[in-house]
Length: 122
Ligand code: 5GP
Image (tube, rainbow, N blue to C red; front, side, top):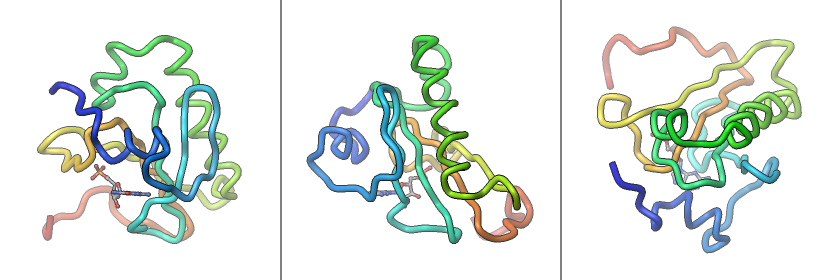
């Protein structure tokens, strides 16, 4: 899938749309999800133009990959999630139910999150 530079997260990165920022560094931006599914629901995105984890893992530099992974851990620690635990999720493509075509990982926490995948009601 080609990268769409007008996707909502690209617009957030360009400052065209506001976000509730949690963390920013050279390679990544983290902000609260607009429609939280848990008491803590933070999105972490790379600043580079990558559609998905598949695209990112194949094409990003080592520094970008390390930057995103480091940011994920830092954000979870900053949010105080390590003691009780948390979940990291990235949706990819149609079967993954990916809505925004700029790589993002979801950090969920603040309550028991239940089974990993719902049996029904998708
Ligand atoms: P996906 O289904 O692609 O993995 O998740 C996209 C996520 O982006 C959803 O959880 C949705 O609530 C969130 N989202 C969509 N638009 C915006 C926005 O404009 N701002 C923020 N902060 N989150 C958004």
